[in-house]
Image (cartoon, rainbow, N blue to C red; front, side, top):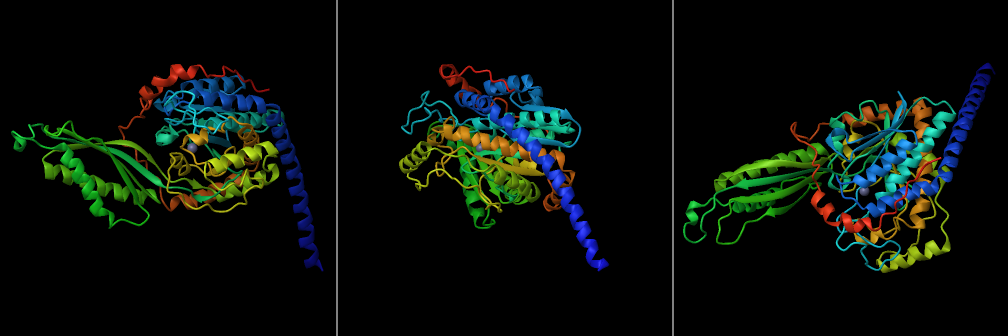
Length: 503
Ligand SMILES: [Zn+2]
């Protein structure tokens, strides 16, 4: 009997302990949800403002200015311009550990300008950039979630730090390796990577692909193509031979590899032997060591092409990204909050708009999702995201929130139709709630952070992180500047000129 009694008593004790913790955690989350609901308009004012700024990577000047103003006024310590990038924004509140960071971005895409609310092709500014992936929504959701956490920390005397990292130029996978190199995540215990989506979802495992992007330039000697071609050294021949050389290699690469290129300098006119040729390559694979192995072979091919043509060559690092490694431990915690918050309640009008839009876009006519997605590992995608680098130096969770119309693919103008709609706004509210609740869990549950760390140590050790950045590499801060400046004056006419203030 004694033996029977003991476990029962222990069992009751555990139930009481869990119930006590759960109650206070629920109160904190409810407090955060109240803050989110009270500030929903301010949040969507931020997101909508960013939509009309429509700024390309490294040129997120107005966007980060608005975020800095809003977050500073809300009591955050804000650094703009760190790691040598004028539009790199880091905001934080609190002090010491645990330190939990939201990682996201606010850049737009070239050619994405579109009048929102209509799926007739109608750019706001002809050929201008725009948010055809909805990164504008990240600005509002991340800011309000962090603010809600801050209010909870203040009112319930929670120690620790909540931070937001808005990294520049995600679309060019251009900034995160520099952020990692600058040490931003050294004292961070966990991050949650935030991105717009079709559902309210999280996931775990290796999410996407490693990528290395480099520009190879060959230098030769000009000569008349008919009179004395034997005096020339043809740099475009070297480009062609590099392309052919890599095609010969393709058969001997892992089936998981991807490699694509574009010839960026291909000669002047046929009767001039070109002294300059240039080819820009992306090499990808399911892991960074695999991608690096292929990349090293590509470099040897460049060397061979130069040897065959008597040209010289150099290579310039353009960008790189590790595949994103997402924590199962954090995913389980985020999923509980997803289940608690649930999907938005859509109106019949929103549903019928979505169905008509899906029909127009020749996608399955399924309307908007009404149920949360159950937790599961996600299939590894062959795309890349520079946030990957962060996920190999700190345990990382993921959160997607339902602000897009299912089936409407990003990176085409149609995806710019809804980022400022009521569909997007409702999805943002759910995203901010789940994000705030998940950060509260990480701040208040040391066992959760410890378990995520232990899982991270095991998983990340399987492929030890190395940076692809050459030591002398500097962030490409001139990226997109000329393109953005072509359109900025015309885009200004659409600015909302709002100054959201959280309360
Ligand atoms: Zn994105």
